[in-house]
Every structure is written in structure tokens, then in C-alpha cells.
Image (tube, rainbow, N blue to C red; front, side):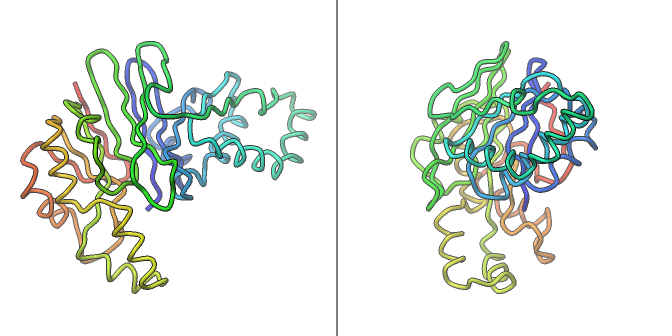
Length: 263
């Protein structure tokens, strides 16, 4: 269940999370990698930042020349430092041999926090700590511009204050867990009881995501970061059925390449 999203708002493209496959997925959606300017990482589980370094490096080899702001938990800076160290030979060789700009100077890692963490043109980004144990620095996100608002739950169990944070959003992108598939997922992946305990404690049942969307009065709901994402016994109709008892508005089930137009 690698996770990445692209928000296009007021002329700004924002990449939210960088799971495995994000580089190819952005290219397939027509994004010019050298045009990347803003990336936000919600938390430091591998399916949300594993490909951050490769994405930035690939953008650099494709012609990146302007700085990219990367927002995320404080420890993200340590990841970036180690990524640069692991690629030092390649980076130094390309700078000397190909005349490329220094990648270090093109990436600005910024620790985010609760409240407004970015303002870029008309776009204002805000964060709210969610509930994703054992990770303590994990964020829900809000992006607003020109009277539009898009909210991401991030990976989270239900928590107090989120409905208010998401209130009135044009789109709520909320993670969702299908409880019928949890035991099959655990049996297939392993780790047994402990993995099941983590999933139940750290994620949101689909019906609860619908309840949150209804309480927040959002205009559209997209189920995202589906748990499990690869169970052949759970298809789009099953996800819709699980949420319709608590949400009767426009509903999208996340798939690769899905586009949601807010106009």
C-alpha cells in the first residue's frame, strides 16, 4: 500500500508522501520532475517516504535547478543526510563530470509542526498531529487557497479534533480499513497478533471515515491508503458498501491515477 498524492492548487503542485513508485506515477500523470517545488511527508513509516530520496535525485538528473521545499517530521532531516551519504559517489561525480548544480543546495528540508507550516503564493498548508501509534509525530494536513480546501487524514485512528480541522473541506482524503480483511492480511503477511493490534490501534474503519466526513460537513470523500489494499475478496463495491451507512455524499475509492476535480 505505497502512498502518494498530488495536489494541484492555485498554480502550485504539492506532492503528499513519497511511497514506492511515486517517481514513475508522477511522470505518468504528466508532471515534469524538474518542476517539483513542494513535498510534504506526513510521517516516517516507509510507505510514506521510502522514495523521497530517489524522487529528488531523479528530478535532479532530469534537470532540477530550483530549490524544493520538503516539509515533514523533524527526523526527516536525518533520512536526507543518510541518503546523500549513500549516493555521494554518484552525486559528486555528476557535479564534476556533468556540471550539475549541487543537489544539497537544491533541497530544503523543513521540520513542520501543528498549525500553519507553509505559505506559498495563495496556498496555505496546516498540520495537526493525528493518532498513529507508536509513531508520535504523524500529521493530518490541510491545504487551502482561493476558497478551496483539501484535507488529508494521514495514517490515523479516529481522534478528537479532526472533524473540526476538516470542517467544510471541498475534499477529505481519508485512510480506511476494511475490518473483514484484517485477519486475512495478518495471516498472509505474518507477525500475527502484534500486527493485528497495530492495525486496529492505528487505522480507521471505513464506516468511521464516513462518520467523520459527515460530522465535518465535507463536500467529497475519497478513501485512501486502503487496508488491506490487495485483498482479492474486497473490491470497490465492498469499500463503498462499508462507508455508505455513514456517508451519503460523493465518494471516491482510491486507485492509481485517480483524478478528482474540485471545479
